[in-house]
Length: 137
Length: 110
Image (cartoon, rainbow over all chains, first blue to last red; front, side, top):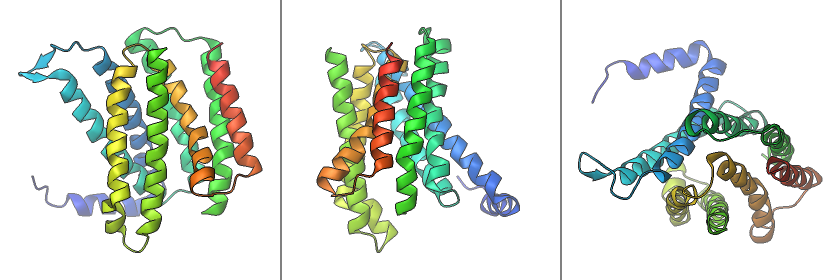
């Protein structure tokens, strides 16, 4: 498939506002990671005999998860070209919060204040871990 | 218990994969293309794929929120393995981060 001019369009958008462009990539990377987690839980709930157009449904979802992982790495690496690790890395802890919300709404899992508090503390820990990574880069 | 053990295997495999990626990128630092196709990097991709597959089985017995909070332990495992195998120095901030994350995981289960 060929889309004439799409490369130059992306380049123009990037040049017009690099910070917004790379922030968009960073957020897409986070969303893909959260989507992968939701897909994994969805695949876990599928029975061994579930099929989609004759193909094992778990296998299809697994391939989607792997494809998502690849895309997520590409977007993440691209955003790191613009942002420092200490700015970008704490965004990864956002995935846990998105997953918690998805767990509540999509899979009807109970969410307690301790769950939310625990994730906030984990996020603070990640910020501390990254402080030194940034200094050594 | 089985599903928790499986999640632990996922955490260890993911951490080892990150270590291999780091080693592969250092070994082939001269060329970006070589970095992606370095045998250690390819082994890391395979480990990620196996970890993703095992995650599906682990989530058959664990809630999504529980599984994902447990995988935060990867943030602890990677600095520890880096210290042992890559001889990366452990600093005060790293230790503090590890303690805070461990505390967060415990609070999550209250």
